[in-house]
Structures are given as structure tokens and as C-alpha cells.
Image 1 (cartoon, helix red, strand yellow):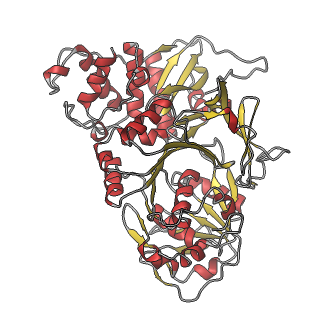
Image 2 (spheres, rainbow over the protein chains, first blue to last red):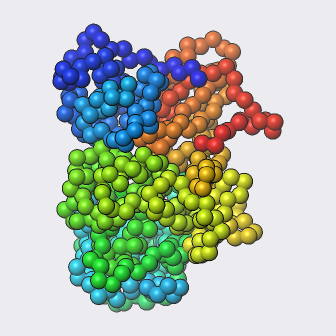
Amino acid sequence: MTLVMQEPRFGAGEQDSCAPDVKTDLSAVILAKFRDVAAAQGKTLSPLTEELVLLESGLDSLCFAIIVATLEDDLGYDPFTEAEDVYFPVTLGDFVRFYERGR
Amino acid sequence: MNAGAEPLSLRGTLRASPRLAARHLWGAAGQLALSDIAAGTALGGALPDLAGRAVLLRVADPLHAAIALIELDGVARRIVICPPDLTDDALPGVIAVAGVEALVSDAAEVETQGLIFAPLNLPVRPLAAATQASHRTEWVMFTSGTSGPPKMVAHTLAGLTGAIKPSPAGDAPPVWATFYDIRRYGGLQILLRGLLGEGSMVMTAPGEPMADFLTRLAHHGVTHLTGTPSHWRRVLMSREAAALAPSYVRLSGEIADQAVLDALKTRFAGVPVGHAYASTEAGVGFEVNDGLAGFPISFIGRPGEVEIRVADGSLRLRSTRAASGYLNPDAEALAGDDGFVDTGDMVERRGDRYHFVGRRNGVINVGGLKVHPEEIEAVINRHPAVRMSRVRARRNPITGAIVVAEVVLTEVAVDPATVKTEILDACRRELAPFKVPAMLGFIPALALTAGGKLERAVA
């Protein structure tokens, strides 16, 4: 299936306050995805910090479902389905590390 | 409650409760002592007017719905329980099909539709004269997420409560809660377990943040907690869940995968984590308590109150807990000639277990809410640049499934990005958010069956 998704691109201009240890290309991809899905779903996104509790980010379950599915298409993996240890992240930092570990 | 005996009316059951004084319903915006409603009314003086009537229960607050159900059971001939998302434009059809004569509402301004009107207001006041519980009330529920006019099924209290066992004597009073709305089958089961099982219940309301509900659950010491796998995944993503200490954790309403079962067993160490199968049509089917996804093949044909079989790949159930039938005159029979209800849930045998693999006819289950592909395809196909489309499920670890659309364009030259935006805008205008395609792609062609229909895989 050819997905004609708006391509979120990261890099220049990212001004998020995630801690340096998660400030990787992967975290930039994930943060861009959060913004992209929030915009598409008409949600107001809280500032994206390491400590942001996902359920208080302004996104609902459907948004997280779309984020995980589109990240799977972009990155080629879905740590929720593939992880050995079952785990559900609480904060944005947890979420990014979960994807980094699953890489 | 004696097994097999006709249950008392709900109010009668409460009046017979030995520890009624300690029991409550706690809502998001108010609470109710069950001793008050056992002897009182929130319907002003209108309850006698509703005796023997078919009553439409359309309230905003689920706590009010619980109050009305307690008051109307045994009094009304029929209670038509509107789910929270039933739209106003569906009401005339519902009223006609269900023969509705009276309306219970908690709204400040009400279009009474020419019906006998009973406003529901708190606080509960003493009931002037005891209204005889003289009817075996029919409970009418809506099947979830049908395309077209809503479908309604009729239950009896005996059928709805058939799976409820008396709580062992000497057990601490249970505090039940569910993430479901009590106006859906799964949520109503929990309300009835609380009311008939000497318990209390904590109720959520549409729009209540998960963190707030979990905080209230901890405050009231919830012991029995149920929800869909999607609900539970949200719990597992919440810090507030750490304050919960339930002794009973159940999943239903969606396929419970091994990941969510394992995560719950880890989070609530030592607590039995089970998943249950029930449907609005077939009633409560069975519980699986071995901690594994799917169910053992030994369930097929085993003796018991519910007979289970698999035919043509779908799960079939036969029991006295099934609905007696659809109200809609044009609906098919609910059960086959042999009395088995075809649930439409497809299963696949792997080793010594059956696993749920999706719904027949491509019906998609997004976090417990059912989506009919045809409804979404109809919106997409209205775009002038679209030749045809297919909507299907994509598996998802957060909501079980999401909706994806594949679209074939006409030969007219168009900008796909613009068409995509226009289609999604139309979907957002006309459909509930969970029905809007989460992904939409363009493909050259869609396969048709020999009969000229879209090929649909099990979703």
C-alpha cells in the first residue's frame, strides 16, 4: 500500500527540552511524530519534555495507536509487539527509550 | 440469589440486603447511598405513571442511569437503555421500533417527542407509595456500532444476571468498577454484579480523565475491576495505577493478547488476571482464567450453562443468557434453528487452544468500539475523484486495531495529497473520531470476489 502520509521531517529547528540522553535522531523522529499526529487529530499537545506523562500530553489512545503504527512504517519495527519484556511506557522519556532499546 | 430462581426486582433485591447501609454508588459528579434509592425516588412523582410502560432511558450521567434502572425494573414493561453516543436523529426510529411511550431524562431542556415525560433529579426523595413490582421488565440494549439504523436486543433480568454467582459468605464487601459505560453490555454486567452481589460500585463518566478515575478507584478501595484490553493498556501507562490493589482483574470486549495479560500479571502480582467472552446478543459466554490468550479446546462441547461450539470458523454460543431477539422488524433471527447464536467472532485453532482472530465481514474493533467498513467506505466513495475504496483493520498494540483505508482513484488527473485531505476532512465531519481512517493510501485496483463484492479478509 502506498501511503501518502505527510512526511514529518526532523532536524533543523527542533527546540524540545528532552534530556540529552534521549536527544537522538530517533527521539527527533518520535517527537516529530507526536506533533504530526496531534495536528492531524486536532489535539493540543503539551510541551514535549522527558518527564511528560503520556496520558497528560493531550493525546488520546487513538493518537498513540496512530503514532505506534506510523512509527512502525517509518522505522520498520514496533517494540510493543516485538519486545521480550512486556512494558507500557508512562513518560515520553520512557517511550523514547523503549524505541531505542527495541532498535 | 438462588440459582435458577427468578430474581427479585432490583429495588426488591436492595431492600433485602443485610448490609445495605454501607453500600454506595460513587459517580464522577455525585454519589448515592443505596439505602436512599431502595426507599426513594429521583423521578419526582412520576414513577406510577411509568408502570407497565415502554420507557426510553436517555440520561447524560451514568449514575442517573443506574438510579433509573433500579427504579424502573419491575415497574416498567420495557426499559430502552440509550448508550451515551446515540444521536438525536436516531430517536424517532428507536421510539417507533421499541414502541416507546415514556421518556426519562436528566436534561434541563427536553424535546419530549410527545411522550409521557419523567424528569430525573437528585437528591432522591422518599417514595410516597410503594409502586408494585409487577412486571418482568424487558431490558432493551443497543448492539454496538452497527451501520444503518441502530439495532436493539431484548433481555430479561434473569438472563442478564445468569452468570452472577453469590459472593462467598464472609467475604469483604466488594467494590466493583469498570472502565465501560454501564449502558453497554459489559458495563451493565458490572453494575448488576455490584447491586446483586452485596457490593458498591465506582462509576466513571464520559470525558473523565483516566488519572482522575484511577485516583477515585484507589480512594474507594476498588476490589473488582474490569475493562477492555485497550482500557487496561491505558491503566498500565498511568502512574496512578500504582495505588490500586484489586483482588480481581478482568478483561473483555476485545481480543486479550498475551502481552496485555502478562503486563497485568506483572503489575498486579498474585492477583488472578482473567479474560471473559460476552456479547450484547449472546450474553455472558465464558471466562478464561489460566492466564493465556485464547481459550482451551476443551471448552468446546463441555457441559454447563453455556454451550460452546465452533462452526465455519466462528464462535457459537447457546444459553439462557442470550437476548430473546432483535426488536427491529427487518432484522435476521438472533439465534439459528438450533438455538446457537453465531457471534461473528472468528477463531483459529493453534495446538490445544482456539485464538480469536477478528470479526466476520471485516467489522473492526477499535478499543472495544465496533466499526463497519461499509459506513466509512460510503463517506470516502462520495468524493468525486474516488472510484472505490476498501476499509480494513490494521492490528495495533494500543487499541487492538486501527482503521486503514485503501482508495482507488478515477482516471481524472488529481493531486492525491489534496484528495486525501478532502476525504479525511469529510470523514472527520461525518464520522466519530475512532471511525476516521488513521491511514489512507492510494492503490491502482482492489480485488473483487467472483460475486462482484469487495474481498474482505477477516479483520
